Amino acid sequence: MTTIKQYKGLEVTVEKKTVTAEDIKREIDAAVAQNPKKISIDGPVKEGDMTIIDFEGFKDGVAFPGGKGENYNLGIGSHTFIPGFEEAMVGMEKGETRNINVTFPENYGEPTLAGQPVVFKVTVHDIVKEEPNELNEEFVKSLNIENVSTVEELEAFVESALNRQAEGLAIQQSHDAILEKLVENTETEVSEEALEFALQQQLARISQDLQAQGMSLTSYLQLTGQNPDAFKEQLTAFAKKQVILENALKEIVAIEKIEATDEEIDEQYTMISMQYQVPVESLKEQIPAEQMKLDMAMMKANQLVLDNAKVDFK
Image (cartoon, rainbow, N blue to C red; front, side, top):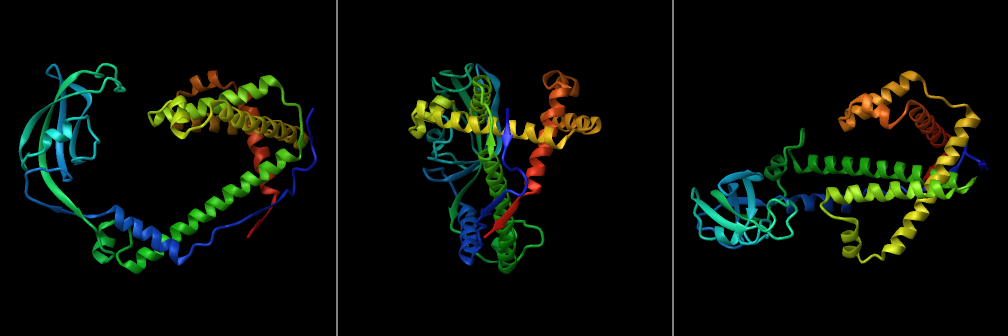
């Protein structure tokens, strides 16, 4: 059984960041630092140079997938490429093409290439050096921002962007605070099954995000120095709040008699299908209509709570 003390008129206070002249200057200074001048220089290539190259990799005389690039910016000494690649480019001249023999590391992510010798055909188009840029109209125009061509216009553009960012962050923080208060106002049973399901969902989501960055959860914990048991404990606490929130929203759906129409459900299937490039029929097998109907009703309940809250932005 679920009991909610209050879900309408929840009051929260959120501090909204005020954008200062220092914030604007910091952003612009960062943009200047991140966009140095690139000046073409004569060769040969040496350590520390920035090169613009074409390259293509071959294994046993056959080009392999993902081994080709055109007009690629490669800093010599950046250790961006396979060990030995950048070192072998030292001494090359503009317009020169050279075959570079290297061996992929044993722990390389693609099994068919791990530990294998390959040949890269490399052409140097240009050698450039980077110098600090200056904040002037020439620099502003090089950023190719629509309707922004002067320093003053850039400052106004950055101020507007930072204000939108601050506004969005404040709104998100207010939503989080409102739902946190809803959880605090809810008394409900958290079953072991529901808690374990929520926990596995969290673990799967985190693992998927890390995998997209080429990292496993185990590697992430080692890299950040986190204790696996403590991490799971934190995640379990978060999963418990998620279960309580879901139970609260289901209760609000029942109290308010909230329903999703067939048209809304069809629109949701279509939207998810387009977002994840999955056929609608396959989605309906993964998410049955009754589950989608409940999910959408809970989304409406969630919005009802947010719409009826009282937020004080300080």
